[in-house]
Image (cartoon, one colour):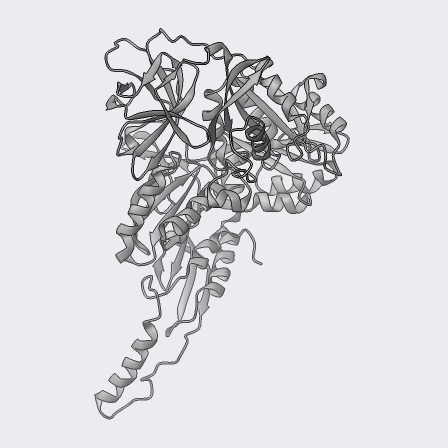
Length: 604
């Protein structure tokens, strides 16, 4: 090994969304000459087309950098992490592969919700934190105020904060020196049995699964026979290497290093994130502490636009899951939409990006049902109580066997301007939020904490927060527990047939209002047909709302009292031609926009 373990530094960059993580990574790549000036472009590590368009990081990226300090060579392993709340699972995995973290705060925006959440994750992982204030070159920068916020909210000593401009490169060389001086080298031994932690994986159609590993102990070489302890699978190593930033093969990965392993693995389900790799010839090796499984919080149904495209959609979902281990799906059948899949996501942005990738990368045409959360339902069966989880309103049990319903609650943290506190508290109370505490982090900014049902915030809560705070409010949430609530199933009937894909679980107090609202929106979204369509909202067997869509044309044979039957047949054939342009659910075409209409909490 050319570089001793004492000269290795593993670190990540953590921050709120859009605080400059990827730009700082660009400057570090530039200073360490990891990429040539010709190759350099903004947000270099954000290689995905959707990441570059939206200006956000979705997948954590790893890169190995060579650095000289005091005439000694150092190896810096950098992991660039996402900032959005939906991808905090990616951040958690990255932290496990590091000994230190650069905590970045925007000099214009100050401490935000995800800043606090990520800082707590880093503290829980016992990482050495190097605090930085970025964008000091911005006209509205207020570094002194932001220092006070970081001291008050995060407990950081202001003297340890470095002021940087990732865009201009100001003080970035000093950041590299602090990484070497302050972040401890990895603990591990070259002579100990091999233990390597799998912290990510991607699927390459030509080479199979590429496994991202952090070697904790021992050495992993090309040609070695390896065992994945938890999955109990054996593979032959075909290649090991580092990201510089492209994949560069090397002879071996040693203790303390971060890199990749290719072993001809054809199915990503043979790889478990958080698993430990060791050598088959060594017995008694203990697995490393892994990760908790990602818990999908938002579910929706994805159906092919036509039944003949079912296999194509199945293949597209399979490919998507190969490069996104937190995405889950399983087959389901809807009476309204036919065969499709129930898909689980970490949040609404995760769902939106997954659907966009299906359309762009796979060319899939899908109908998406309204997203919903998972509920716990307690049933009485033969005198015994049984608890099950429901991720689809269509599977909601009959009221006869129902004992209680529990909904997921989250701890919501909002950082907002003090002037907006009244409107935001009102919004939280309308969404059944329970106030926990209010804390001022400066005379003009405040942290609000609420316990609130997840179902109340997954769709438009963030939009309303941004609107009420003129764009200055930020939010973060974490799952707390399931809590008993007065919930019921709201059924939607179109032309006398229940459309299970439009059914939803709502609080009893707003059920009738929500039913009328959905029916009014559906009347606008569903086009006129050749027959009258009745739209109804039902709670149990009670109809609470009804709207009628008038027919597109009158009865074409209504005035044909006599004459040859062929005359009627001609008119019926003309009518059939008109019906060919309809996509049927039962007898009624329901467009994609109508399925999403149940998301709206109020009519436009």
